[in-house]
Image (cartoon, rainbow, N blue to C red; front, side, top):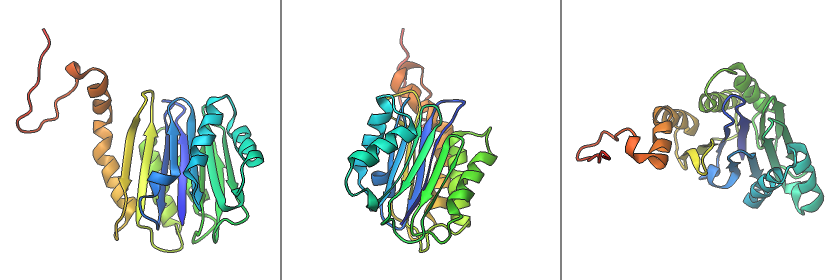
Length: 230
């Protein structure tokens, strides 16, 4: 019911996950990122705690493949799960349990991993990784959106998708992008792309407002008052 991509930007150190599904609010359950640590997706018959556990293992010094291997050794019911993980060096790993739904597949690249279940075609994750890699000098969010569009255009999920999301972290403790289309009867990936284009030029300004509000750019709304420190 889901296809996703997780990645690290080697230039900025940012991590991100983008995901789409026929289920509502998919990013709220499947996407997990932690600044300076990594990114993990837990999907198929989803157990969100697995994303947190993978990030904890990465934070403890495990590589992506080591974290996934340890989870497989110590966790019950993984035959129902599909997992991907990216570590701080750009290492990646993927797992699809024996009871993953429908047509399913995963693909890995340099600092990027994609996976999906109930897919229209096993080539979907490959198309996503290729699209991400083809824009190697681009901004991470642009590359994630491009990859999701490529997955959709390669067939995406076998049925219609209704939700999508993009979660990204940088060097601050909170996500610098947490964008969600939680339910639509249109094209959630196209709507996510539009939302990202709106958010992208404002991303840094919202970080500055949190860290140094006196120097932050104005919101540009009626009635706004700025206090200039003396």
